[in-house]
Length: 228
Image (cartoon, rainbow, N blue to C red; front, side, top):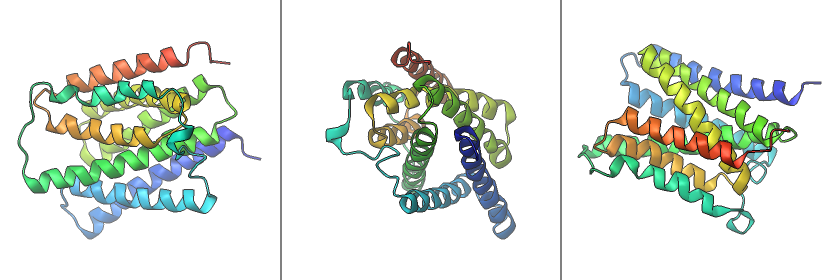
């Protein structure tokens, strides 16, 4: 009988396999496709398969798609909401309409898929564990899955740093998910975080580091004393 951790790892591996599988198919069928467009295709297919799986299991509510009346401690949602605005404090850089639409579509799908998976499905699978363990395990897996971008985009040092940041981000979001009982607003703030990092005038990496460190600290605060 597989344990909850085994099931979690198998689901995580399935995500990784689909991501890389779609990428290699795209490379074979449409070589030379722009990385951003390839990423859009990948996340669209992942999101579709994920939605189909959650629907088949009737898990939407179980993974955090709860009505607002069921949400708890919603004041904490102000933290990720305010952090989304950080890249914009010195203004917005102009983008071509096509680029902006591509970013909007990609980040909307990313917010939906990653929150449904990592703060939804995996949290559900690990529900018998302590809140701290759930946050730690899902955060590590969230960070590791970003290493697949090495295959798609190269640039190992940057992607490795991104994976560490994603783990910190994921830890904070997992804590918020458990505290509030919902993934719905986290999908929105996740999308806006990614989008505004691209739109803002401030340098992306330092701003992302600040956001991730704050989210990690908030996660530690919310989960204090909940390791057992």
